[in-house]
Image (cartoon, rainbow, N blue to C red; front, side):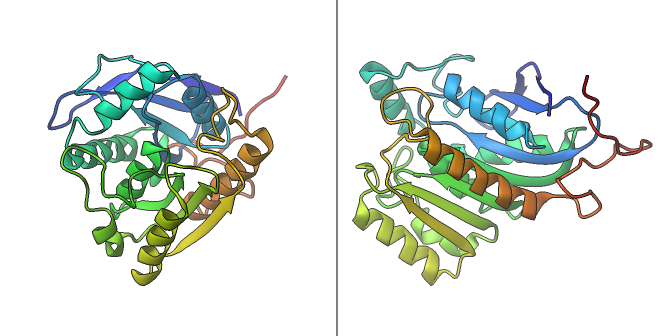
Length: 269
């Protein structure tokens, strides 16, 4: 699908405006929506390319700036030690309740977007994986994907920590959990703790552990694993197609027709 990136919009939240970027197919119609939460570095090049990849499979993808209270609009932190230090400081610079408010704001935005069917999924990477997990506790989210979600096992997200482990029973979305076995940020013991909590809470989930390092999905730097990334993108897209597709759409996830229009495919020349 040919894509377009809309100009950034500022969504109102209890802690101030949150710049959010939308990637969507050009072809007319309505598509399921995805909230896409970034790493601690915010909307960097790899995040933009992942958003475009997802949108190209027939989704309206909204990427919020997760540290909007702490950084200027448009801020992208560098993939270096200074950027990591700043992102990690920002991570605990706002309470977890503010992250939850942000998620609800993006969900409402997508539900009202003229190109969206109103069916919502959530996806995130690193801290974004944890934010996707929490966003999936909202009843309007039908499916959630979490790539090596940090801090769940430690309860250390946000100022004062988080209660994610204790809230597992609130998850009604179907979850896809993807981990790198060589990721020091979520060691074996932490993954076991999370998996047991999800099992005990009877969450509907699929769990994958691959031989990969932290950030194996990021298409910059020495830890990137293109073959593994492709496998994982396929898993995520397949889940979202199954859970979010309009039953009236044809095979392959054709978009819903806009009001007063007939569904039509993309014209290629």
